[in-house]
Amino acid sequence: MDTVSLIDIAGYLPENRVGADYFARFADSDRLAANIMFRAPKFRHHIASDENAVDMAERAVAPLIERNGSELVSNVDILITHTQLPDVPVLGTGGELARRLGITPDWVVDLHNGGCASFVYMIKLARQIMQTGDASTALIVSVQNSAGQIFTQSDVRVLAQSAVPGDGAGACLLVKSEAAPVLGLECRTYPEFAGDMTAAVDPPRKYWEAGTGQLHIGFTETKIAKVFARGNRLVPEVALAVCKQIGITPDEIDTLVTNQPNRLFLRNWRDALELPPERHPDTFDECGNLFGAAIPVTLDLENRAGRIPNGSLVMMSAFAHAGDFAGAGAVRWGAAPVGV
Image 1 (cartoon, rainbow, N blue to C red):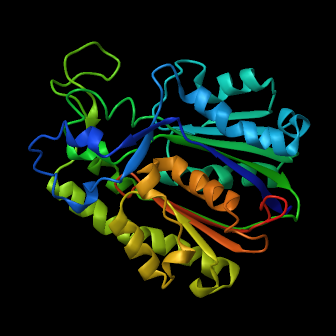
Image 2 (cartoon, rainbow, N blue to C red):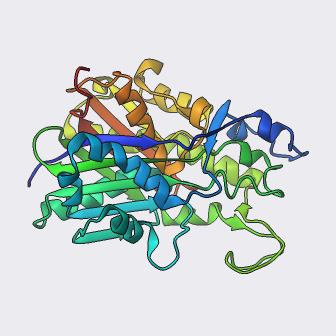
């Protein structure tokens, strides 16, 4: 099997940096307000009113072009995108991003499932395509764009859930090489849990139909308890599966990067893997819950700060939705900026 390497990563956060006071002034007597799952971050970023998912994707990809040259990106064989709130009908984010970048990949895939673990899932899919065919380069892009659109609606922003998400996008380049090898990947699907997180509108309607109700996530106390229990278990579980796969112990992980749903999950995950806080970057208080974009954005911020030296063993791990999907991947880091 050809080795596939993650050679560069980049992130984008919208300019609109929103403090917790924005939601505090709208706070209502939501019975879930005291639940630890919804304790708000200090800040989060919101997509601009004239910005869409493809704009965010393009801005996340721009540093990759600047650092690696337009030729590498313009000749990618595979483009895979994940968009939390698909907002480009018919063509989709991938097709429109390819048009804007002027690229003609053999593979253009809009991956809708995978949620907060979609970044790992996209890497696995790209690596599988590269190892079983002629493709040698891939561009992976994850966009979270629902915070400033879904969660700021007038009837939704009063809910405790609305203060937690933030918007952002992340992108990475994969190539066939030994430079920064993807060492192992593990993805698991649990469809029996999928019904525990659903979109809700009152009165009920199809989400694209005109109506008076505003789309939000239909949480209940029972569902939250189930999600919390599964999330606590799944993220360390898939990370440990990758450790076993590549023949290491958890204490050999130099940097653990997970999705960033709330402070309690973050603490529990590093405790489960017996890692100190400095090995588990936390962007929650600056970015909130970035869903599928959390892993690449956190990696980008840590990498540009010089806290992931080349040669480090980086473990990515996340779970999605109500625990219906989880994924982890290990990389021997080789994307540190020049001089770091």
